[in-house]
Length: 429
Image (cartoon, rainbow, N blue to C red):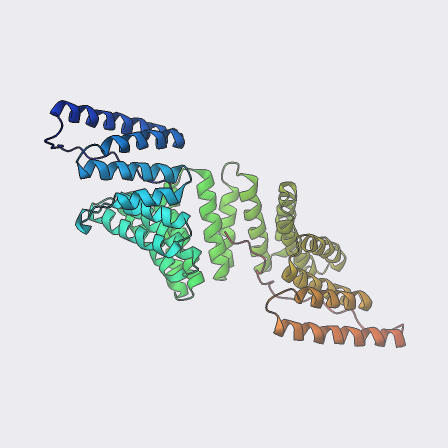
């Protein structure tokens, strides 16, 4: 969010030591420098803006008008924020603060919040954004209030304080609707739904209502990229609520939009395939898994490609084609090894070991359970999973010994498992 930098307010400058002509000349110089500074900011020339506002401040110091001086401090502070120097910007902004709380104005609080956030003072930033939102509301500026609430909620999200983040996004949506900014309201509702799920303090009915409100506003979004991101995020939220059919419809809506950028399209295809897995539509999911894996591969996103291949392997397993599943899981496992995703290695090792057991390749299954335990040792949590892996390794070893003693066992091939695959590999937005 760019800093806000209004022009200094006009006012009469009274002095006994300077002639009216000198004062007027300096006021004119300040206005011209300020105008040049604003133009430089609009054109992205932040260093030029700093120079203009700095000259304006030096001129204002020669006057005795606190309002003009405060505005010059403010403009220079905002310019330093745009120039990527938040510490200097914060110092100047603090000098521009009026003495009376009643005289504080929202743009100042907004910029103070930006400076605090850039300096890693997230808690202070959230407080300042909230103050800015209150002040914007008192002025009837719903759009600016919504912007402040969005930034405040992102601060809470950084601190993983999901409940106030969710409430902030909901307030932003209300503010945007008042200002008839329905596309921004849809974006705020998208974020609200996602954070309500993370907060785990909202019931499914309330979350579903928010997601439904978001989808009711999609016709107000003209940018296909933004529309695609909204459908993707809402679809992922529906998956987390285990409303997979609704999720599938959201993901499919993205595919009907004008050409999407490969990163967004890859995420949609990955999530669509995973959602179809979760509804048991494994044959329909195969093509989406392949397309997503191919796109991620072309983008150099090897970890995401491995996730798609893992989902593809699960689909082949559910369809009973163990040979295809084995080949796919091997490719997925190599991708997770390359990216050092240890937990994902554990999951794929388990799946691949089960495939080998169904093919009576017990030694390979034993090796994979051992690799899974080794990968699990790099994970912070995994006590219960470790116990489960040890039990499965022990069972595989016993089966291996049994086969060695009786090389021609007359055991029927176990049927493929039934039921939906948990959507454990969905990509968060």
